[in-house]
Amino acid sequence: MKLRAVKPLLIITVIALGFFNAYATTSNWISFDQTTWQQLSSNSKTSQLIRSHLKGPKLHLAQVDRRQLNLLTEVIQQERERCGGFVLHSKVSNKKSATGLLEKLNKPTTPQVRKPQVHKRDKYLRKVDADYTINQQAVVPKWMEQVSTDRMDKTVLHLSSYKTRYYKAPEGVEAMKWIAQQWGKLTAKRTDTKIELYDHKDYPQPSVILTIKGSLDSVIILGGHGDSINTDDEGIHSHAPGADDNAAGIAVLTEILQLIVNNNYRPRHTIQFIAYAAEEVGIQGSYHLAKVYAKRRTNVIGVIQFDGVNYKGPSYDITLVKDYTSQQQNDFLASLLTTYQPDIKWRYELCGYGCSDHAAWNYNGYHASYPVESTAAEQNPYSHTAEDTFDKSGYTTDHAAIFAKLGVAYLLELD
Ligand code: CO
Image (cartoon, rainbow, N blue to C red):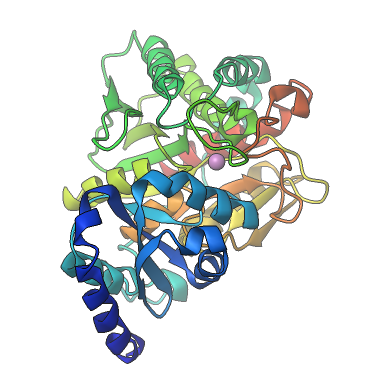
């Protein structure tokens, strides 16, 4: 209904688009919310970069010069309290697909499932195939005790030693290869695993996907982004160590994988660990992957995102992101915390549009959750700067260990 009301505006913008065809090859469409639109349109630098703009009731689309994406990222992220804020749509080539996309973005994309136990906000997500009963008390605490911060420290130390892991930088490629190598080495003795460097056509950085084949085809995904960014001075030569954001998230994934191997765990579901490329520049890697999974109709029963896990905020240990996530799965995470880490202080909070890779899965109808460090108001002040180094957390992954333990509980209980 609301979409209809803005149709005259759409038509005007579409006509305007005709004048900009010459730019088609260097431009991309990005989507964002109303707050970001206000930021971009009121900033004299970024307002000039917008070649055309489509307004929907909730989300907007703008055609921008791809070469100026770094400036847009800077402006969007400096005013936001967390990563993200927009999604880049590289495959949208003409006005027709842009208007189509705008409508799609502003309405749910997957069939509605109405069952009495379904949370109101989840009604557009796929039917839940997951069993959220908590009954692995005999195993989970034993694994939690095995979580090693020494091992996680080493991962953070190594990954934050690259000058940058920016998605366009050669080091950003090297770092992903290193992650693939580590995960490959860890699982080398198993015959049920596969490691893959997933190439994204639009930029050099690959995503890393480690698959442990279960007896079922349905998939559980544990992910975090491997790239980093310096929004004070974005580019391939800037220093962006990204120790907390998000070397620590990769350390959490690596540690959970290590425990699977150490305990010779044979999963029922197929488990995938993903280090996403290009999260910091419009969740590009996960957006692409989630679309591919949805197209193939892969039955992903749950997705958990680790992005920003090692900074201990003064008031809360964990924030459970409430928007663009699955409330049913969030409830499950809340029960996992109550059951297995009752001393952890956590709360719900909104994170905004395109906040991290979970949003890409949520958009495709999958049940995704995002537990993140601290609260937005008390977040890591060094994120997205040259100062996001390991010494800021006292060279320890103590805080990240909480997330590794939550991940272990999530995996064992959901599987
Ligand atoms: Co991040």
